[in-house]
Amino acid sequence: MKIRPKIPPELDPGFEPAALWNRAYQEKVHRAGSSVAIAIALTRPDGSTRTFHTKILPESAPDSTLNERYLERILKFLLWQCGAFQIRIAGCDPITRRLKSMYSEDGERAFDYCFFSDQAYLQPLEIIACRHDEIPDETEQIIPLGRNLDGCRIGFDLGGSDRKCAALIDGKVVFSEEVVWTPYFEKDPQYHISGIQDSLKRAAAHLPRVDAIGGSSAGVYVRNEIRVASLFRGISSSDFDTRVRRIFFDISQHWRGIPFEVVNDGEVAALAGSMSLGRNSLLGVAMGTSEAVGYVTAQGNITSMLNELAFAPIDYRADAPRDEWSGDTGCGVQYLSQQAVARLAPAAGFDFPEKTPFSVRLVEVQNALSLGDKRAAKIFSTLGTYLGYAIAHYADFYELRAALLLGRVMSGEGGNIIIGNARSVLATEFPELARQMEIFTPDEREKRHGQAAAAASLPSLH
Image (cartoon, rainbow, N blue to C red; front, side, top):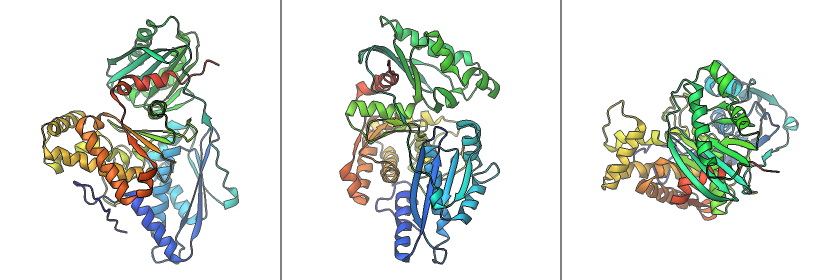
């Protein structure tokens, strides 16, 4: 299928939004007069199961060759949205066998298989063909974290270029600061341990006592245990297993074993936005070095879902930009991060030396925009169009009433252009969705210490 959006991205006219592709495919299913019911169940180690129901074309239909493409992209999205160690698929055994081959150690999606098998959940990822009556019911283990403001608390947020820390007394921030650090390529775990402890001690100096500590950082955390985290990319695998994996358990012992919780930064960012705005069914999207996402349910809770949408596809064209890490095409990180700015810069007319860091290119483009450079405006216009179609795609998998946009890409006038174009896409292509949800960015106070303060609220004292 060739998809032509009503609002094509200014610098990327070949973009084929997943939201429109899936709708066009389902229209074909409807017109076919008959269909095949499909159920996909993804189960995580904590027992949570996400069940997704859809329909595909019968094998006799002229376009039935699209079935595999449709189901593989849906499965890829669900896998990085929810996480799983076991996937059951009912209704299409031949395609399921093909997917099992793709998501294997030697298959086309070997990166995904190894990530979930060897890092995230420490057990082999299974894809199983089954009957519909063997699909488990959907269940979600709600994490009882956040919105606890009683007592004297410390919250921290560990980023790639700085670490933030805040001290709170009964919900009021009495101290907040950022400290520059360079954790990515440090080989000695003690650098990370000392840095985290330093921030905690700085915050503790402003409290009469410390009742609880909460933190956030990019990566996959399972009950405070680090499974995958970019902050420690410089650490050897042996040091990671012996000194890093349970680093927060060791640090908590220095604080007398008080309540201590660490959660993925995307979840805490969404929680901070929900607490600040007073809204639930909220998706937080941080457009920075990568794309970080978190979700707060309609009941105001965070869950154990991964929400690692940097690896979830939003562009279905065959020659979509390829993610150098996962090897897949059309994934969110190439559209909603500083990598997207760097990728689009040549098309806009910017000529950066090959070794210029993406963060520097982003700053240069933002500076050019502040001077009225129309080339820079085209880049942010394109990102805004990407975002509008991405939000519509996300709404097929999440209940959405609000989106909170964060990250360095959203800074300055470029952020306003991004939001304006995203709203235009939703109003033009998805008017019903546009009416039911709002798009926000945090105010300056929230940017300074909102996430660290929300992290402080994670542990319960009871």
